[in-house]
Length: 330
Image (cartoon, rainbow, N blue to C red; front, side, top):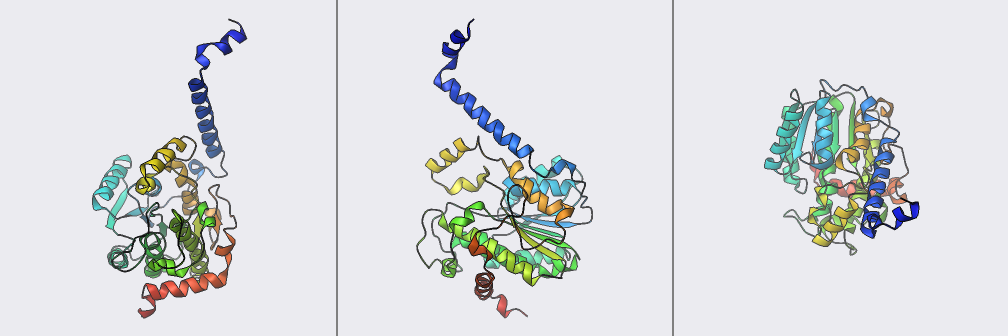
């Protein structure tokens, strides 16, 4: 058969060509992932005797991270909003790693009362914590106020992690050497600062901009945590896992969910998204590094300019301390 006959045959229909292009694009994504600067399989870190806390551990990136930490010997606390979904994840991780040491804790990060109750229980169970991964987040939710007067997305993505990290500071410092990892997003560059957003006020936000702004706040406050914890043995960094296809999109309309599903062929899956998080959790070369923003390629990268302003971060810290009533604690 001549080349022209092959190219002009019905096999090369537009639909078939489209499938080939999709396959090649997906292959390109996979190859780029495998060519990253850090390879999890070549990391020898053993976590026996260490305690790790992962929020949003019942699915997606949080579940993948929890499973890998447990596989390496850590005692892992799965901090989940739903007991049922958390228990299911725990059972699945346990089945994959028979010797895994797992503990399930319930926490709703949008509720300060829930965060305080969880921290109180956790400190009784784990007087020392070596790793805290603030992974849980929501997006695609219109402005909603909680019973405590906080805007739901900002409460879950920023206020909750801020409060939890502060409540666990003693346990982190008692560990001697500990790491806090805040999951940010490259979309934080589209956010802006307005402290009134925390209580549902402030300047109006466009679709999903509450997510962008909440991630900007989390990225900014990472540097302030690092400054305040300097010399304690506790490091705090933020990381962009990349665009990852996870259940976080469940609150979007069907149109956006379908669109995201179509894009899922070209973006990362949870295992790939967990890679930069595990890099910060396990790699020895990041010992002592704090207050930095890491890209999804595991490289220190400057965050948005607004997130680099120490005066803005200090103002944000003071406002959030008052909002969470941490200024009233002894």
